[in-house]
Length: 533
Image (cartoon, rainbow, N blue to C red; front, side):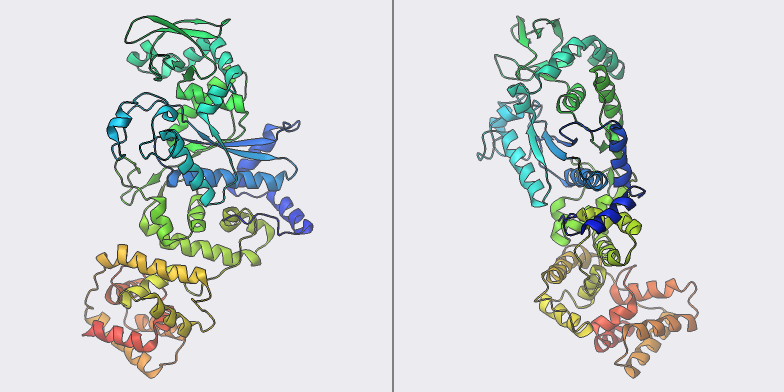
């Protein structure tokens, strides 16, 4: 999916670098935050980006959105500061205790026996990996690799147990009172009475415990608690994986321990980002830069919820459109609430290709504002399909769910130079249009009969097509436009909507001149004649 900047000459890079310094595209605005973060020079390791992942479930379309947007900022920064190394960490919170058994998984009894254990200590219900956490981590990495993301995977369990977090965990212990003072006002009275930053891992059961602490020893680096089953006082080190932190403290600790410079999060985590940032400052560090992106809505405008199942899966999107179109959709207005449902796919795909086609003719400033540049991390690969996906869908609809060979014949008659057999992307678009139509369009198509005025106007178009069988798309479009005006359609868009509803069975549709040219004047005449009865 990513082409990068390697194909550019040094002089072209220099031109883009200058334009990037003033570009208002949001990835460049975010990248400039990182430049301002280090006015006196960057750390030896460069700049670190992070995205987080909860491995109790599988990666999803939101995972893709967060990683692709973070990658867009990373690539924008690389254009602005080409000599500064960058890394992206995909961090898995796999030391979280499994609080409930996901109902859709096999081997429910096996999982139930491991409740409250770290996900990396829960048996894999599929029997393919060492643990449930390892299974889902593998799925995450396969997911990210599928799209060509450049990242370093980190496991929370490994970081805790290897000692990588030890020094920062001791700092948390030393600043427990200040952290508690920051956290407790955000909690309800019941939670406040039992809250502690540290979650001991029970030496007896291996479970991650949410229990009040009865003592702490900063010099020894330990905390104590009463075993909830035996009542005995147990003392454990806060280091070496013997304790885990509550997640907002954990998030701050991770930023500090790893030196994270940039991490974005959903709007629902604004308060969490604020609290974790406060804790990072208590620990003597600067929280990362970033922004809060808006959450997606379903077709009715309700918040998407995995529990409700009202969302769109990434598998559904990729069944009908390439990943570049999804990345394009993620680029657009990340701080604005947007609906995410099947109906947005055709438009997203067509708009993506429109921006790709526009890129070569744009000035550098416009190129850096072009979403296709950010989708690919550089100049997009040139490709212009001969027709739009929306037009293909309309063609499939009137052709009665035609097969790929028949659609290819329509296309070659319309644009003789195109060859679906030699153009895999066009072939994929045709197959996707057929699948999308069968799955989501055909069940809802309902053509209506024309009223008297509409029938008269359609009859005029039919007669004109009979007299002009070789007319091209522009001539047909002009005649349709003039016919609407002659028959008094006001506003004129009501005439085109009538054409869509009568001929295509939809309230929206393509440029009709182009559609008739693609479908062929003979077929178009038959379509109109059928509508007229």
